[in-house]
Image (cartoon, rainbow, N blue to C red; front, side):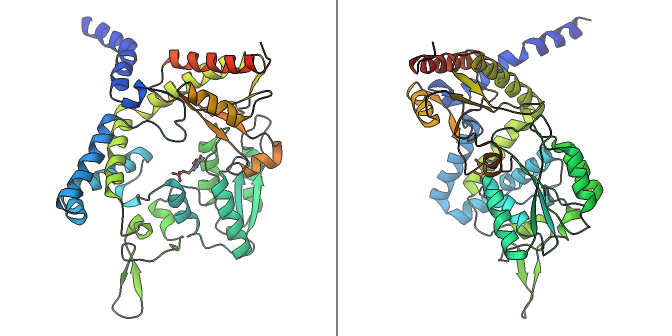
Length: 372
Ligand SMILES: Cc1ncc(COP(=O)(O)O)c(C=O)c1O
């Protein structure tokens, strides 16, 4: 009985204790209120140390030699990523950023006239540019799935579009800057049932892709005038890599897995909701997030002030935020023309007090712009 009570108490108070410790492990928390985590979160001490240790090793013994010595750590990054997405290490390819990773998959889909690329209104700008280029090159058609009344992808409309499209390969939506609460699982189910390609490249999808770059990591010369692709997802990778970054990614992944993605997500959403509510109550301030399940990203406008000026003023007050602009949100801009907006994105290590300070700073700016 006693031990059960102890467990419950630990659960109820555990987050708070962890939060203090986590903030102590995140040096950037000391100096700024970092609400630009959808851009780049603050590095924790363990990630920083893993990266600097490898950089030092490279300087001391040489880059290739350091990579050979750190092979276990490098492999551990792929294993941790596989655990994160529910796949296997052989299904993981590493890239220097997510745009290149997405491009490697997308540009490897053999498309042609009559094929359709189904995407959502909130598709990320780089992905839209890739659609436009590939459509121009191949004759494939881009179809934007309409939103439902809540600003989320209309799952019924998507089902109808998939049904009316023949069984050619199709690509489907990615992430978003402004209204991220998309029914990704429902879209995934529709894609799976119809055999439509959708983001994560499992083994089963591998044979349907024609990797867009062959090089000595992704392919092997056959001794004549041909080559064979490497096994698994390695056929998308490049030979030269920043192993400092890969080792840092591994450290960050381990931390995320230890904390738990659900716990991180819950914490972020709670902070996002507090921020959205606080901002929404200020005179002259509007928030613009859509969807029935809103995530932690909060977008806002102060009437009479430009998003850039607001972001700069907040930065001077040691509050980091970002702005959303038309380029990365082209389809949303076509529909609503709402950008630029100020973008706040809290993370698990932000505190309620920081959120309240950010709201107070926005209130002050709004007041200076004539909204008392
Ligand atoms: C929705 C979304 N997808 C992808 C990216 C690109 O990520 P990366 O910088 O890792 O290429 C961004 C960057 O802003 C983004 O906002």
